[in-house]
Length: 233
Length: 233
DNA sequence: ATGCTGCTGTCATGAACTTGTCATAGCCTG
DNA sequence: CAGGCTATGACAAGTTCATGACAGCAGCAT
View: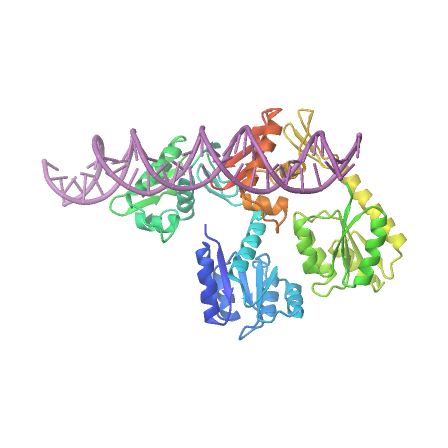
């Protein structure tokens, strides 16, 4: 799953630049031009990391950070602070209110992505364990391990991501084009029929424990993950 | 092995003095003039004990301690807090956030070294009991000694740290990049493939007692320490 | 200094595994 | 039954990993 990064910065040009380079690295970027918008966005969807400018038109960056740190939900999100001035005093205040890292403008995009990568890796290594369970199917996202009825089953990475996607969005039909977008990424051009093959492989793997009936073919539309088919198992 | 002590203190003169007397006692001393530098240093090399001033130019001492206590890696490092004021309230807050000892300035160097010695002994004493065991694998953290099925096996320091990390975080996949971060430190730039080689060496060592099957390769993702693979042994 | 030893990071190579594509067979709908 | 859609097996190219070899380095005793 792509990591979400929220970029809070008032200058549109800088936002664009940051967005561009982060998306190239495979992150999803949300943009906010002020603190108000930022908090609205976060209320709807908590990002994995936040990039916050020092100077914002409404609330100051440090104040915004302080507020995020107060909230249970956002407390542990890593924050990188951006500032125009490279004055030490700023850095000091930034770290004091709880920023995890600090970069002064003009920002080298390479540095930016490097720091972000490091922070995300770090926080990811110890976060709460994520496991998806539907009926007998158990997908341990941290271990990268599928077990069905307690039996470990090996999957290729594509099948793994496919199953992860299905388990996160059960019950809905997805066209081959949609699956390609979500799982392979938006800029890959692959035969739609290839999806069939991976569905086949996933089914084969699940069949080892007779759990392949949860993947339904919807003729003319695509595929659907049917959780209800698994309830009896 | 010399014990490493990190001294976080903004006044250079005091740092010098402390360094001098600690080195005379046979410790290695790292210096940081503020919290930011301190965290960078610790990211690369975890010290055996930290000496933290109450007043730092960026983050306050207690806040810095709180952060170290949150992080898995630095949680168990003994911390001595230094303060100019000898007010009881400070001491209370210092101990509250997790300092192990508390000294008020001006510090008698004799007292300082005595307390440090005591803390290190104590933490050593604790960790003397600290032994990681998974199935037949037994890692004595003090003796720096690995035994499998009662047989001692020699490991290089890197393999040792790798195994220690795995045993402390079993069941989760870690990418090569993450392993580099956590074991080599964040600012080291080493080929990712090097991780493979150390995994190989660790496996070879464990294979002497047929216990190498606990280290799983997760293609495209990294490596995982599987404790369940050892339960039958 | 000198040579020795053990450890570490890097690299080249071959092995093992994945994956996208295609051809063909099978199935469903009207 | 035809036409369109899907399932399946085979395969070659491309990735990723395991492994042995090697040079540089630090520690150590000589």
